[in-house]
Image 1 (cartoon, helix red, strand yellow):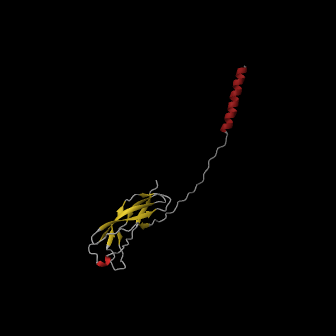
Image 2 (cartoon, one colour):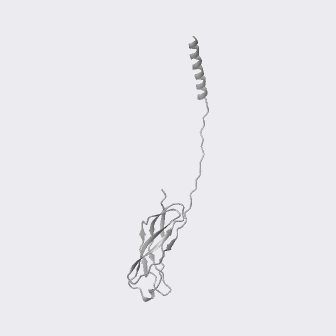
Image 3 (tube, rainbow, N blue to C red):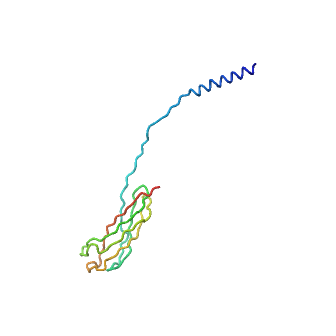
Length: 147
């Protein structure tokens, strides 16, 4: 009998405890979070030491540096073709050109990269083009390379 009373008491305690657990309140939550994006900062293309040796019909290598002031890496998708401007001595615009290049690699955040390009002087360049420095405006297309 004692055993039976103990079993009934244990079942009663479990039933009450189970009811308390079952009756516990629950809830859910909802809302939102916010996050913002950065903005891009334009890069700058700068000449490295100027290359020399151009003459009518010649091609020489020259280098430029492209900086990445952004907080993320960028891929240099392309560097545009360049066309010289009219010089002070009267050497015609377009006398020196450089070809466009693509897929030039990645520049890490806050770093810079140096790129070698080719410049060609037209075969019909006049004497006014002797001993001149030619400026070739260039544009680089950079895209985010963050993974």
